[in-house]
Image 1 (cartoon, rainbow, N blue to C red):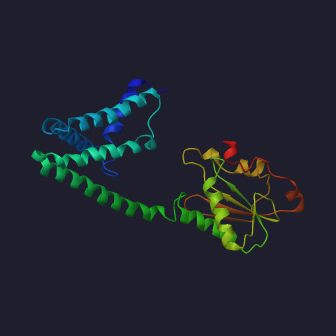
Image 2 (cartoon, helix red, strand yellow; image 1 turned 90 degrees about the horizontal axis):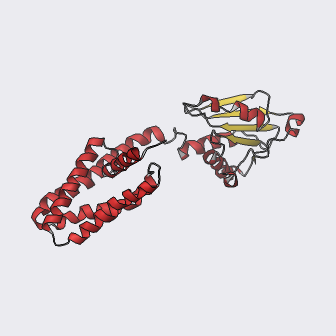
Image 3 (tube, one colour; image 1 turned 180 degrees about the horizontal axis):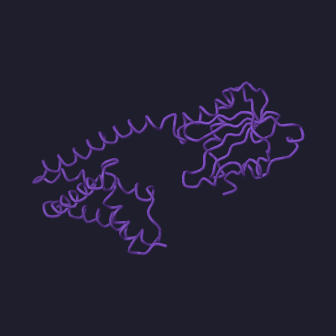
Length: 260
């Protein structure tokens, strides 16, 4: 439940925190916001193009007001498309002759801060992300390559993730299969069967894979090999008998977009 007062405060927060400076503390975004408002007031007073700035306020602020018709918090993709209008307005401040120097410094600082802070943040965060994070393609490709590199010519595999769909690891398995002469059978039981398993969310440990393994993949014995990765992903290898292979997995174990 969310009240309209909370919605209004959330929209105000969005207007202020428009990420003009990437990954900045709130107070820096507030400084940028109030500087923009101050230059906007000066623009109204010292330019003949008042209609441009009036339309900017009308469309930019009006968009957030109209968004209150939806009783939900705004997601990034719902307000990012309107940011170019804000950037256009900010860049136009340099055309105010009386405050051209001040406006130029302001715009240059914004651009420089975005480049430096965004670049530095991306550089340092990537060191802990690439090849390690669950959403890193390099990691997903690595775990899929590990499955195909176990030298089993004929094997089946299943992929589990707490969200049921498991789009990312499924795609990694599908894509990487092309690099290994297309060996492996998607969501089929074979004498050698692998499970690629994503970890449960930190706050929902009950969303583990054991129930899925026994009731969806319908594999009840113990794995002969388990390889666990630092981020919680793991690969389990099973050796199944003909009787175990005959127990077919749940037909809906591999849901696609049609199941959403």
